[in-house]
Image 1: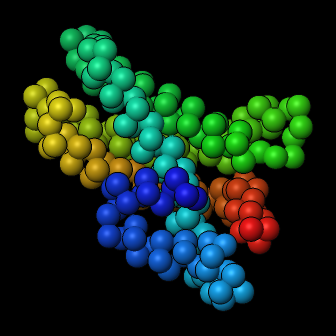
Image 2: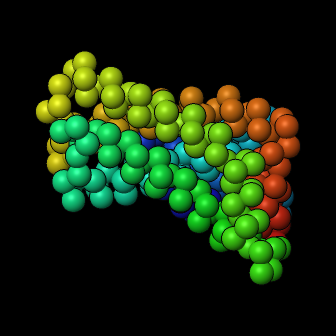
Length: 199
């Protein structure tokens, strides 16, 4: 979560700070040393935090993928948009796998396989919903508004991406809620709680 909250602030701004103060800070070891037990969270908080966790994969993936494609001048059919879509999605999935790998502590020598299984079971659907919404928004802006003139070197591009990240968050909310209700996200939520209580 130390990565999730700053990444969330990149696109949600002040709303991310408020969410952190209400739900994130009371889970920190320093806060718990002073107050012993965290306050009760509303039911939607777990869904929000789990969605933010998956959204962080997409935020990092969008930044890395976009800069990679722009830096190497990659194009498909004379457009930067198509390799950017591929790079963003692949980077988001890889970041999700890396997140799971470094939080997978109980698999011994099969850590990579366990991390992959956990991501496919509890993260791929949310990441895919987020990415399709984000990339759909970027395609709409590319073809309907900017007609190929928008470049990552422009602040307007990153504003459009920021709006797309917010849209992606709301698109990823329903599948994340579904995964939580069906127990696929329970491992992630339980791992967060265990890490908090042991700190």
